[in-house]
Amino acid sequence: MKALFSRSLLTLAMLALGAVSVTNLQAEEQVLNLYSARHYQTDEALYEGFTKHTGIKIKRIEGKEDELLERIRNEGAYSPADVLLTVDAARLSAAHELGLFAPVTSALLEKRIPANLRTSDWFSFSTRARVIIYAKGVVKADDVQTYDDLANPRLQGKICSRSGSHPYNLSLMASIIAHQGEARAEQWAKGVVANFARTPKGGDTDQIRAVAAGECAVAVANTYYLARLMRSDKPEDRQAIDKIGIVWPDQQSYGAHINVSGGGVLKHAPHKDAALKFLEYLASDQAQRYFADGNNEWPVVAGIKIDNPALTALGKFKADQLPVASLAMYRAKAQIIFDQVGYR
Ligand code: FE
Image (cartoon, rainbow, N blue to C red; front, side, top):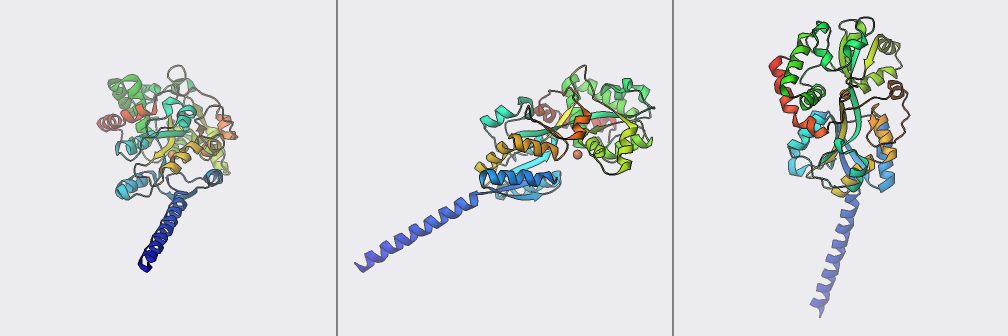
């Protein structure tokens, strides 16, 4: 009798322990581990909004784009990462090719995000355009209306560029391959290299400053770098902007090349439900505003009202509708061609 009693006590104790660990599990599930290559002030409000909405806390690991990718890869099946947020279709597709993402099915994401801006496992949440800039008074706007114009011999010795190996240039090249085929894309790259004013170096902002300073006369840059200078407190930044003209390329044909920032749920995510909720939250009206404004980008969801004087000043344009998956498809080819023609 005594033994039986003890056994029931033991069972009760085990049940109680079980209850405790279930509760612990639920408590654990109210957390999301976010690996992010974004570090903008407005992102704080973005994450608070999610926690307020869902009760799920966000633990953030920030790092440089390529380091984060490497880290997730090294952590393998033991990675605590639930979601990876990063910039550039080429990087997102690299994460896909490494098998880091889990496939996601979400009616909400499919409804809110245009088909060309999502894949089976990663989604774009904002867009940026790669535009042509030129030195006013040195080059005529009419001479730089298309990416093709950058290869025209009349621009000999006038072009500044960042490295051809940088994802932004690889994605642009991938779009040219997708639209015009490899042979024409290679001709184009050769023509651009022949027009260089100097060996590629620096980032997009360095190219903008070089054009403004007269070191070269034409470059390409992502729109948010221009917006940053336009909104800068430093007079020299705004003076640089005054010296340059900005062209939306290829408005009579396929439209300006756009790239994205985006993310996906990771294959070994310990909190997959929370991760999906987070992606869906990023597509909400409120989050779209924060997400895009944080880096002077455009929301992917249609009809979102933004309050960003620099983006308003840049105005409306025709964006290339090429699927982001195509940028991924031709990324490796883009690198091979750039290597062949010496676009380093
Ligand atoms: Fe950038």
